[in-house]
Image (cartoon, rainbow, N blue to C red):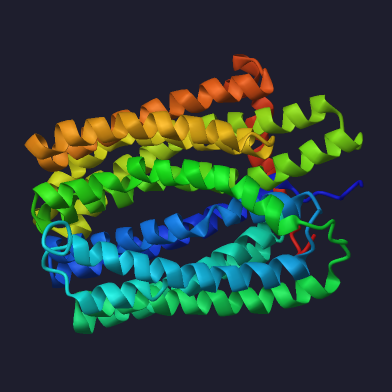
Length: 449
């Protein structure tokens, strides 16, 4: 079935705005907490956010990836995917709430010392609506409804910013934590408002067993994502067990600022995955050639490489200017921790794009293999470097683990695509010219076109 495809660059540009929303909200919250409570408040909020994020990841079963894969290949209608995913989201979220609370209570005297059980309950209460709105995101992306995706994500971030930061000024950490369930609830409601009209217009006929296929596909991505959390989250948890909440707060700001490096690659990754899956299906159907599909993927990777230089400059300026200006002298170490994290963060940004291409081609098991190997290396580095060197050890270990993960992504990318190094990683003049075309597209843009 031939399908008119939307401009991938427009989707990526929209996704950049979207990816920046959560980062801006998190950064503003951290500034408010830094100025009202100090590094320890930042550290405790980071730990609660980490607990909530990990709990949601564990119980999600990778359904976000499975939903995107099935819906983008037009094997699952929006109507059925919407109904099924919302029921699953709220059910799995309740399981995550109970599981996360058990973990909190077990580690209350070590990792989560100084944090009240009431705050953990409030934070974990965000899980059911969080999963529901994330599944809505997956459906919107699968159908290339970039405006809806942006509206959904920005509504969530804006609520966290307004409610969380507003209450944090008056009530400190407790107020900031209330922003988590408030933002999740708003996101889930906006998801309903966006998906209902889309479901009415959808003409796809379900091919049966879509949920089963989505779960089978998603479980492989789920395993990979769980293992990736050892790279992304365990440094904070292990640091909390061996250092003070203040150390965690200083380090968490460095993580937040350097994660800006993932905004552009993740924006491209977000829209690339459903596009690659759709092109792969069209190739099998004979609607597009394998060469066209390969060319689209190679161009996306080259753009990821091209964007690393301006990203590095932006993050360097944030570390050198924003930290002393906005956070104050207590966060001086954040600057140098950020520069230690930066090389690995930039490499992994490109690695994320490679992984999106591999998974979109129908090989999520490679992401699982790579995440397993990367997680083992990361855990060894964290346990070896964090106990003696605290935040400095965490930064070095994380940067090395990120770089190793990027190398594994490169290996599996070449196994799946057989694209040459020059074709995939050396930017061309036409790639630079794409940004001028994107500006012209933005001037002529109309929603839904």
